[in-house]
Image 1 (spheres, helix red, strand yellow):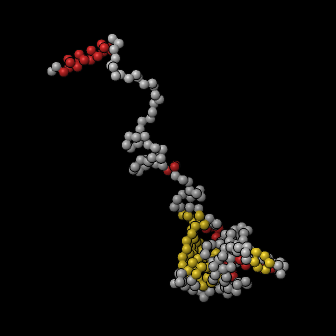
Image 2 (image 1 turned 180 degrees about the vertical axis):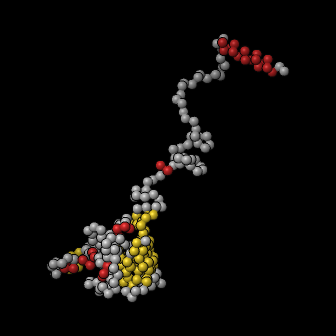
Image 3 (image 1 turned 45 degrees about the horizontal axis):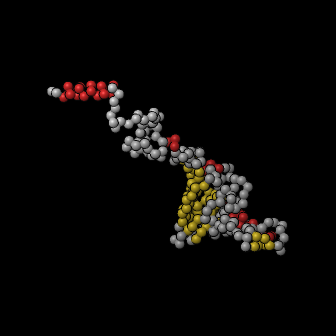
Length: 257
């Protein structure tokens, strides 16, 4: 019952003391004006660092604009496109594998699987004609499938810079092998021109024309009309043609899917 009058009396006395010029002995001077600061926005009441993120799913705006752009700039992630497939057969017509290619995010994804082939590394390439005739003999190697023509090349180049030059295919001791990789050397639609495209597997490894200068060979093998007695260094004509990968042992015509 008496708390209110006492509180009122203390308030009046305090006001009177201030009016008389008195001040508490421990009072500090009023701080200078400071610029307004934004209110804390962190989940725990602290100011977040520039790279802090809030737990939980993003709001309606999210952070999509902060994502790295697609490196090709041609398609959204996961977007698919054209595709092709080939049934790869040996000279006896026996199926020894499959080759597929599909466009994804503006690049071409290549996949090959084989069975019943000799173990070791094998060169394999895309060739510029979609014809696999085992009776068509290569004049250089004597092997079949010369009907597939030379390596696919959308512009003037030497091996291993042809459009159709691929990494070597490794086959295990059980005769099976598989490889998958991504390339931007071509788009799938470019494989289905008027001549078509074939995939060729070779008997030997492709050395990718990697011939160090410490090796030499007759200049006549490097270019027609060269001095037969002179020596030269680097890859010769056969190496620049196909990486010394030898005869064709399997072929498949690429068809659009």
